[in-house]
Image (cartoon, rainbow, N blue to C red; front, side):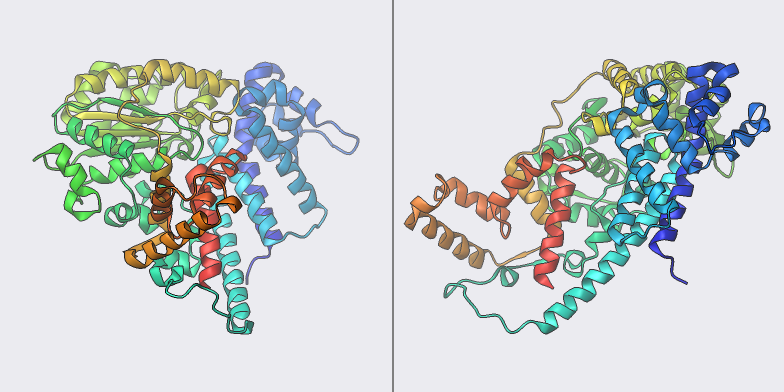
Length: 550
């Protein structure tokens, strides 16, 4: 029997309770000490109708967690926000908690939820869960969100079919000799069909590692078929190949851009290049890469990918042959399985960082090694000021990063690629800023190999992701030239410069999307909260193209 939206919201709220509970208890204990934290939680929850925490909660943490429902968890955060949560979650986290309180109240009072409302709740809940490193619960809620997107797509597809059947034959108003855009270029099948609404254009390293990502991210050839090699991305791939084949290259590269600036996509590109399944001749732009690396073959490397939002510092990871507690344990196991893990086993079990010599031996023995670290700030800020977690302490994480960068620099065929955020959405509160500052000092900033995307490159990135590669260029140029004639013949009715050669070249690069629309999306919409620059533009334009195509 199909679930109702109310039932989906209920499951989302239950996952929220399970994920927030351990974080709340941990933070209250840190702020109010071992002796007083349970009493402070009871005081924060006090109200005329509240029966109080059970007696067992004072001596048994599991009993305490069992006594906290979703309402209690959210209000424990909200009513002591400045004291308990502000440092790690910041104003962005506070807005998420406020939204979840409202959603929980609507649910508790038997309110109804539309598909869009239920999706928004699931999306916000997953974001909040990732902020507290509740990776399993976040993944569960993500699945609920995907199911809601699928239902929305099916409803929109049915609506489009009905509207198309009811519409009269349109009168052709195109100038004689000009082809409509659908005759010049076609959308990718997933955009034309509306499947984009499920994929969301979200590059996720953790899903790729788990083998559960969409094909466009999971399959190396499909990934590069839809990826435009910008100057910055090309430089990153070149330095990575050089480094991992002992031909030079930078040992440590930090990627830092605003929210949605392409960090994860760039990391995934290097991941696939080093996976042993590609040759430069397999993808568009590969000849540019081959020209810069010369006769060197693409490397086959051991790869470790550490995604902070997919790792829970309070929950060890179980593998068939080992149990991993820390980042260094995870790193070693991914590079070489149980044999590599043995080299850091004691350090992993004690939560103490191994030294740079041990890590150098590890990288040398299991090299060439590519190490990709994403969302580390989100992971490390939840260790800030907290003791006795399986993952070790905040200080041990910072020591590990220092040792790792030193070890990578010593080992000729190893490379560390790490992303650091710029936006408050990703940084969180003051703890996130402390983590970011510390990591920036430890890692250093090597930015020369990775340049921001230019406006023209943005056009090509979006165009290649949305449209197939087969284009009737002659028909496209006729259309663009007709626009140029119109702009010149009615110059007073259009902005200055649109009839110039440079602007017409932009029209060709962006076709069939008008450059003016790109400008408004990138300059205006990208300032909105949650509007991730490239991904946001892709999602919006995919929706528009799907509706026009249908």
